[in-house]
Image (tube, rainbow, N blue to C red):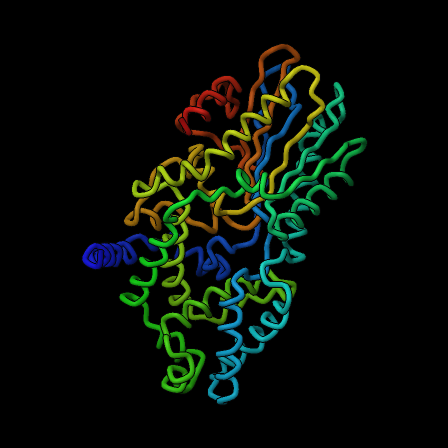
Length: 421
């Protein structure tokens, strides 16, 4: 095992220096992107491709990650808080360190009693998605043919339930006459955020990340930027590799809080890029479709795929009152789902040596990321579906469309079930 990791570290060292230009340039323009999957929700205005003549939308099936949140690991919060407080007492901050600490202190104070919960930014993200969905597809929420039921299901984690609440409240304000149902619990957790038994690939990814950090990172460069005496920093924090990682990770949450401080902007840009090079592959290798763990990821996604199919079948049945199904969960379920379905940008199995070159978490799996399947009917028996990812039309490269981004539901249904068979 040790020898394998040494080989992987050596191979990845080449990749770290070979495919950095695109994401490095983006981080230079916006330091928040170094946060990867902790980047806030952003949309780019897009246009709807007209549906084939005679077709109108009548049902939406949705899965969304919770909105922006406070940092969710209390152990890391406590570690950063205790050690940075101890360092503050030594009076060894540089000018850059003083500016950073002032804002870091505010973000730490705001985390008191709120670790892992939805921030006000996260609430606004969900409200905005709901309002735009109602405005974009008024036919779905018109109550036509008795379709007035909007079903909402959430992970049992509070930030997801709060995301569901904010989304539904906004949707209700943007529509009239709808009836909302709300569910959460272990029964729903089994598909909203399924975790199979056995060794999770995140353990392997975490082990690899730690090995790479100790082989490639230079924590002294970070600490010499913030402190005048690096040796005193070492004496206080002990493991400088671990503390640099924790400081970077916690700083990724600053711009998501009510303070809104971009803590990452205080880091030297090359250090941010180096940290992102570690975090982006670790996140993908833990939850994306890789050759090493593709079967496991497909197992995670299977219950959610089946739920999309089953709820759509129910909504399409004669006399159904269902207008929409909205689900609220986590990136750790959504990324496996997207990769299993093979949505554009998630349709290839990526391994260690290709992730950073081809896939960026700040684009593909940021806060409040969402997939919507919008169903269209011609009033007869034919049903079409188009996919929206983060409110933009997208496709499944492996499946041929009927017209533009529109699939026949019969073809898409068969394809989805085939992906988990």
